Image (cartoon, one colour):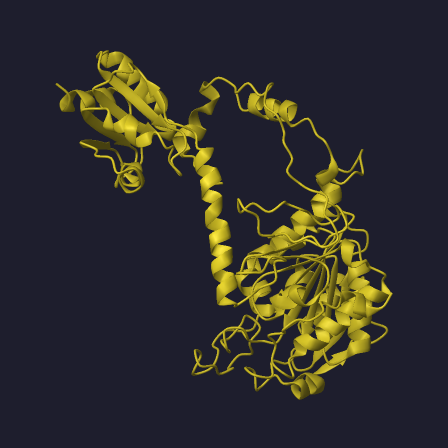
Length: 209
Length: 287
């Protein structure tokens, strides 16, 4: 799992409410190993039980190169294919667990703004200032893999505007590639600074009627 | 305990005939057996290279990770479970080249691990490019006019950083190398053992005979507790000393210094900590 962050977020977290952790649970997935334990044993969902050294009867090996079920390096081409399939099959479960994007504003929107990461409070405030009845904001806290509803949520809008703090519209490209959605216009800033609410409001107004 | 408990069984070994890795593997098994270290309590950690394949040829736990990155996971494994014997073992290219920066800071942290480096003065896995310990003028298919850099001196570097145990050995001497390894493994703190070994295929200069002729053992009267003298000896180049150069006894280890075992000796990995409370505190501290 990769957690993306940026300087604006880290510079301003003093100003955000604390997360309530009282109801969160620590779940451990470490198993006590049996004698013939294999760290990369082939399982229907691709996920092998995780053992650690010193816990149980088995020996635990891990490897960065292509390997067999025990973790020993291999150049067997058939095994290589099996192991690639094993890793790729995990994606099904990861997709099932994907966090859906959050919609702010009316459910029957015609204009949809898209943002991700630390631009969230800025775009939300801009939506409030503009106060248009058919304007909503879709925020992604998980950008990959995308939640299955992504395409239907975006396709519902008549006009889609993406707002990103990078030069190439990285999320826009990801959405095109993995959800096949059309984005009508982009508001991009890549001077090195984050957006201000005022400039987001100004740029949205230029694009909507 | 017999060394064969470490045998990996029916395996295909990728090393060339005559490679020094074979004797280092055998010497390590002998040393571990004499120390009664059980395969179940040993973790071998390595990076990339021919030497880095050593965990695959042993019956024990292992972490064969990224190029040059054996020392960070080795430190991590030791700190979460100090009951394990942890050995980070790789070649001179992996440990001193790709992993040079990790080497410096692992020495500074001083985790209770043993760092064995197979030093054949060449990159063998990739067929013979100059490594950090290649001699000045050493010709390779890449360095066609010879290496123009001065070789890296791991012994001098380790002593200059006050590494808690610094030794050099030669794969051709089973008895002495085994004794050095036993002392390194039982030493409390970071222990570096640089082991000279010939690369039969890609280093035609620093051969078995070359090492035999150019090395000698530090005298019995050498005082390994004298850091300045040890450093002085590490600079010798004409003939290369073998043996234990330097020991800093009872230097506090990383596991001791981080403080997590001061009140509770239970390995961190087996503790049931209240993470929520600690995370909440951490979160509040950022306000």
